[in-house]
Image 1: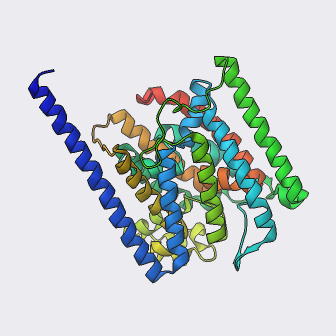
Image 2: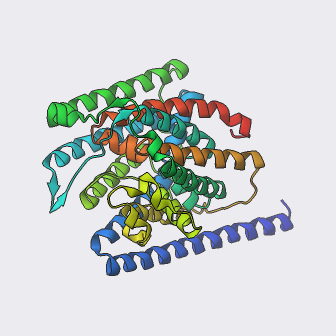
Image 3: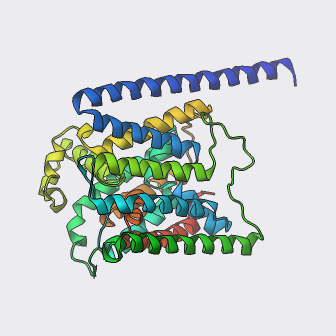
Length: 399
């Protein structure tokens, strides 16, 4: 290697170091300012929920805990480590959620689970969401943390996600009254012990099925795709199981602070609604916004909205994690087909989540964590859509 090449490499390394130090500093300053604003204006609970979102962003980034890639791995390679880690995450959540929700109150805060009907809207919306995951490149939480970490393509997906959510609120009334069944909670119908037991049995069945399928294709299990990487707390990567347990803690903290489980996509609908009002569109005449308590949110600050505050926290947390890891490297070089896939995927993600009572967090994670059968229906339909979306990725130049 000649001297000129060495100098160029040194300059490049120094530029990367400087950019990531600056990124870390910016994320810390913005997070501190927002925390102080929230605690002084809206109280300790809102600021605490922001910190929970901030922690979620760091966890999602350092553990690379994506639902999209985990499901895609099962289809493409037969590797099920990510899916098995999700079952562990859900099991821990159910063990803590179920007695708390049955108690109905904690430290003066009323607690409720995420329970919704089992109907055609869940199936169609989750199936759309599954396709959107693979074309857009991320789920709800995945879109937030990768966009926050500087992925320009995911910023496009996020913008389309918001637009799709707005479309979903516009057509929300069309999906009401579709065929289906009333909400069904395992804990409410079989008791706390019964709800936990049935849930653990279902998690075990999925875990064993994923393990057997992987052994069938490879002869052995790979517990963590990152198992050859050195683990560090501040720079990552974290083991998958650490991410699973940490995200369970995030959802439990959200339940205790907000009185309901973690959700993501309702904020996208709110952001889209506010933008539409600014553009002169009267969304208040839509049935979705005429529900109790929703129309007033369009006139209020987004910092009053718990989900918005947590989402902003996730993005800032991911930005901080990327800076600490030295991996904040945004690039504007995006192939046209990839951009098209991001737009289509984002629209499907937003629309699907709005009509299916949530996303991979609100319906799958929090729904199943609340022992609601609609979460399992969502999982089956979304996984089917994700499988189709995985097959479609090569047509858009996606690996």
